[in-house]
Structure formats: structure tokens, C-alpha cells
Image 1 (cartoon, rainbow, N blue to C red):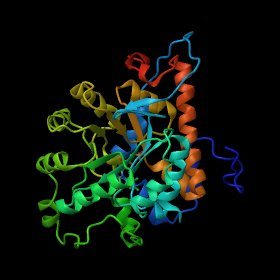
Image 2: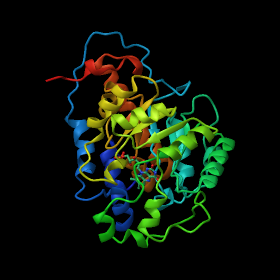
Image 3: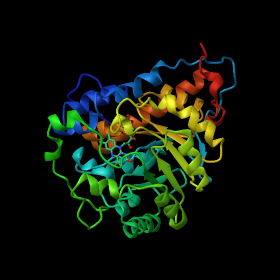
Length: 361
Ligand SMILES: Cc1cc2nc3c(=O)[nH]c(=O)nc-3n(C[C@H](O)[C@H](O)[C@H](O)COP(=O)(O)O)c2cc1C
């Protein structure tokens, strides 16, 4: 992309792991622990990435692959690519330009963005940084329901007014996971930074209060009825929960174990995805995240029936060491790898990627 990313390194980053190495060298240990750590013994965190790698591809040859394109249909519109930036809190820990830089990069690359409710940048400013043109990826707003329905609705309407296309309700984290690495590094001492979407009421003082206000299916039903925007649920992993969500008219599901940050020893998302896809039977889009680090991983997710994937930590790596250029480079690398994988598997359209391209042995 013609940008000299790190003049003082021997070579520019050529893959996402290179971006990880560059980022780890330039952020304080507590920030690195916050980003990289997972829950418990971090088994789910490790398995997420390993499991994508462990799935083998089975290409076809001599197929026409001219005009290869990565467009994807989702929520009644064409998306330039099947890739979105996952919602992640507090981008200001990575770079002073924070979510503004992430939005610029995603928009330039035709990648979608799911803005976290815990962003440092107000949702309106982020929306302004996204190119409004048709080549832009989807812009969605992620929220936690914190028990205050009026606040949730106010946020939903703010997001709609600012041009967001959908809401993503995260349902897998009624409380934080047990994160040893974070406690050792004293992550709690990091400055909180601005919280432009947090309710004015004080956070609950006790775990009992936290659990008492944890969202239930009643809240999902209520939000589906009142939301001015399509509503997706993030953190669905059980096919029976997928069926409940469909009964409530949910518009999309994100299969996620929160990047291994909440409940350790959950299976990797590559193992959870097929049962959810089978339960949904094409009635709404299914997305997946967790451990996606290569274009081949994206291809495999689509082969297992996902409509699109979300990318988490690597976005923060690019942001930390090179701002918007770093994020753009991370996204460019992944899209180029997906493009090459499609060509080498003999598939010209994302919609044609199916389980026949996975090795059954
Ligand atoms: C530092 C960090 C902050 C996160 N904050 C949020 C958040 O605010 N809301 C949310 O739904 N998920 C959050 N997540 C989870 C991501 O959306 C995503 O599920 C996960 O990072 C995907 O896995 P990956 O990082 O291996 O790609 C966060 C993840 C990280 C690493």
C-alpha cells in the first residue's frame, strides 16, 4: 500500500503474526495483557486459532476463476467483502486516533465495522469517519444490555440517527471472565478513558447486583420489538439458543466465544459453527469470530456455512504500531490471502465456497 510502516524494522510486516510482534514491542505490558489474555488457562483462546489451522483444505483445479470477487450478501445489501472488524473496547489504548483510525481503515478497504459500546470515540464521530458510499462495508453498533432499558433504547436510536445499519447485542458476557493474566499485570489500573456510551447511573457494586441485571431472553424479545434497526446476537454457540433467537425474529447470529476471554474450555468456534448453521438453515446470516488469522481461516469459516467473519485482536495490533495505516495493512493482508485462497481452491465467488473444499479425511 506504499506506506513505510516501521522504518526501524528489517522488513515490513508480511502477515498478521508480524503485526503482532511489532505491536507487542510498543505497548505497555498491562495493555498487552488486556489484549492478548484469555480466561482461565487460556485453552479456548489457543484452540480458537489452532483449530482453524488444523482443518485441511481440499482444492479443485482447472476451474474458471476470472473476475474473482469477494462480495457478500448480508441483511439485504451487498457487502464488498465477508470481513468485519469485531467490536473491541477502548481503541485509545492502542493509538491516540482510536476508533476514528479503525473506521478510516475499514472503510477504505470495504471491510465492515462493529463499533463497541465501550469505544473511546462517540459513535457519531466514528460514523462520520466511514465513507458513506456503496463500497463501504457494514457499520453496526454493539451493545451490552445493562439492565437500563431506557438507556439501551436511547443508544439504539442514537446509532440509527448516526447511520448505523444494525445493532449487535453481546449476550455471552454477563460478567467478565476469570482472567489471570490481566490480574497479574494489574490491568485494572489502566486509565478508563472516555466512555461516551456508558449509562450515567453508577455501575453495580456487587456481583449479586450484576447478576440480577444480567439480560435474559425477555430482554432480547423486548429489544427486538423496540429496536429501530435489525438486531444480531453475538455469543450464540448452542443450536437450541440459535432456535430461540430465530423464534424471536432475530436478524443475525454471531458464533463467538468472545475470543476465549470469558469462559475457558469452551470449544473453539470452528467446532461450534456447524451446529448453529444447521439450526438456522439459512433463515438469517451467521457470522463467526475467534482466532481468525489467515485468509485460509476466513475461507474455511465460509466453507462451514458462515456468511462473514469478524476479526478481533489483529486490528489492535496494526492500530498500535502504525495507526490507521497499520489497521489498513492488516485488513489488506487478510483480504489478499482470502483472494489467493479462493483462486487456489478454484472458487470465483464467496457464495460458491462450501464444505466440498474441506478435506474429509
Ligand atoms: C481487547 C478486547 C476487547 C473486546 N471488547 C469487546 C466488546 O467491547 N464487546 C464485545 O462484544 N466483544 C469484545 N471483544 C471480543 C471481540 O469482539 C471478539 O469476539 C474476539 O476478540 C474475536 O477473537 P480474536 O480476537 O481472536 O479475533 C473484545 C476482545 C478484545 C481482544
